[in-house]
Amino acid sequence: MGGAQAQSLQSALAQAYSANPTLNAQRAGTRANDETVSQALSGYRPNISASASISAERDFTKSLQGSRSNATRFPRGAEVTVTQNLFNGFQTANSVRAAESGVLGQRETLRDTEQAVLLNGVTAYMNVLRDAALLNL
Image: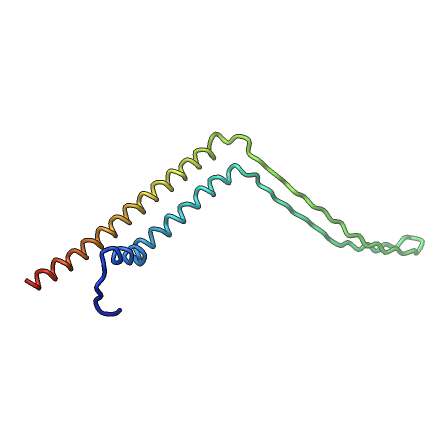
């Protein structure tokens, strides 16, 4: 890091706001918490599954009269299943509401962290001004 630099209060707060690791971690936590709403909403979406199979069969037969036959078959099949919940006892609706409430709570925690970081920045800035004024006295 370089030496001390004269800054305005606004630039010191802008730097504290953008470079604070606690605040960056809280922002990342808020983004991660936002994903819970999408996960809860997935209860309204259909589930689709698919499977396929193929095999090879070779059949050699020999009859009593001495004739031979060779047959090769390739049995195959495919299946697609779609399921959709029509009613699950309000479980999905309650999960969505809980996830949305969690997101709102996380955003308020982020605001609280932002205010604490900015208050600490102002306090430190004003302490430096106070100490510089005392030194000049």
